[in-house]
Length: 73
Image 1 (cartoon, rainbow, N blue to C red):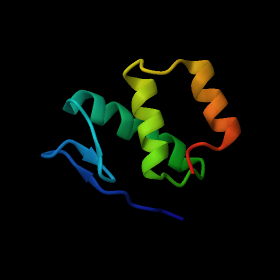
Image 2 (image 1 turned 180 degrees about the vertical axis):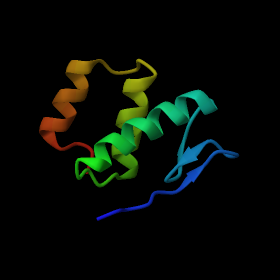
Image 3 (image 1 turned 30 degrees about the horizontal axis):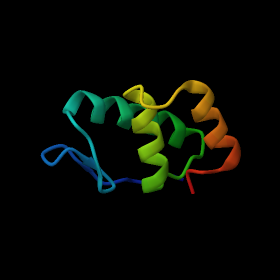
């Protein structure tokens, strides 16, 4: 089933999560879309985690740990 999420390019937000620039917002939106295609249902916390990975704030191993712990819920 298809789910939509709120993306506001003028205010640089996805589901209320703020981004520093349009490039990072679009990279995160692309990652979300790929994951949603596989059944992921995004939450604001999950979007923050993906954003932080995209900008290099967290490592791949930290991202995997968050996924295993279901920290995105």
